[in-house]
Length: 134
Image 1 (cartoon, rainbow, N blue to C red):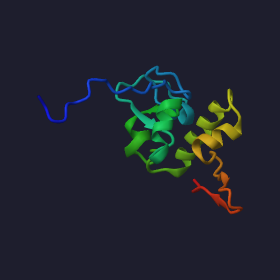
Image 2 (image 1 turned 90 degrees about the vertical axis):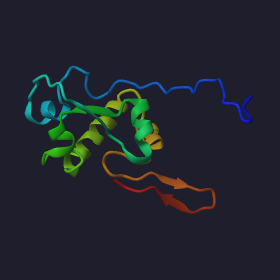
Image 3 (image 1 turned 180 degrees about the vertical axis):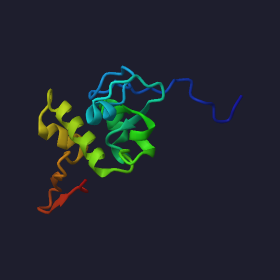
Image 4 (image 1 turned 45 degrees about the vertical axis):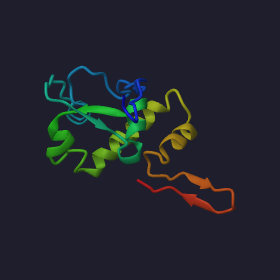
């Protein structure tokens, strides 16, 4: 008998939603959006539109896009190298979310909007603090 037995309960897995930006049809979202290229690719990578502390939220709400390696990591238009394309994806995700929700709900969820506006939070002591901007 173990001194500290392991729990037999399984961890509750989070549900991974499909992207709200683009169907999972084998095309790169930015190839389609920027170049009107609808070729099927077999090496697509998933990009979480809001990374860092919001990565879990991106996964849960479908703020993600399938991208080819050139648009994800390696090329000059890659979202991890090109702020303009990163902001484009963030604005597109915000627009898609706001089709069924309000802007206020989006800002409460993410903490900022795709236009770089910060959420101003009142901490109850009369001092207002802004979250980090984009």
